[in-house]
Length: 91
Image (cartoon, rainbow, N blue to C red; front, side, top):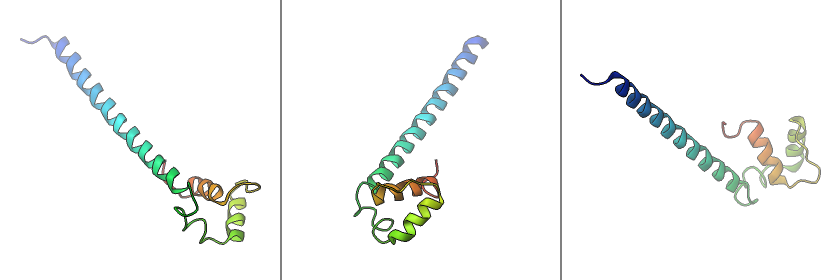
């Protein structure tokens, strides 16, 4: 008859390994998504739909309504913060 203590140990070891692997995969996916989001907002050209095509006065009013500081900031920084805080990628 097999030792139940060993069997339990290995079963828990496998479960822990599976949980660790799943967490690692989730972390990799989150890092990839974050990198894609950051590269989207790196320039006005890559984020055209949210920066250049959006009228400045409406953007600034919208950002201020959501408590985002606009003074002295680049438009794509403001759009990125607005996007992340209100309706962007889920966390």
